[in-house]
Length: 125
Image (cartoon, rainbow, N blue to C red; front, side, top):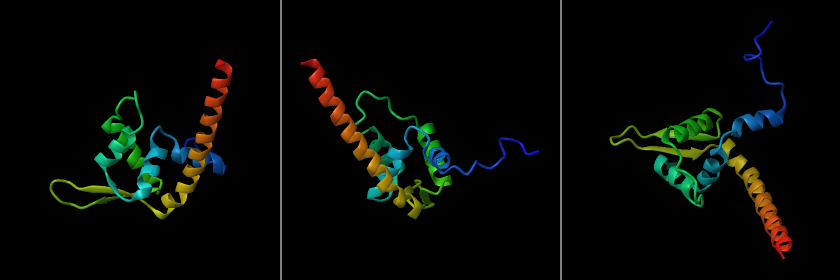
């Protein structure tokens, strides 16, 4: 009998998708890479934009997220092999095909937040 941990996923596309993008920063990293390749520091700065009051991302966490995205095939890591080190991350074809999904999530969030703000203003009156 196979071990449950080594058994293949149930074949559920939603579960596979959820596993691929689970993590606090993965969607934002993919979204930021849609404009072209970025270096580690640029990705880190992008994650801090618009995040008022949030703590800076730990380097270890960002490295882990980038590695997971690379392993899932959404991004590609290019090491130029120079000193000082130069490494860029870019979307793969699979990653580029994911950008419209994130855009739809972003649009839904914008509509939802606008509706919530309107409801709060009406309730306050």
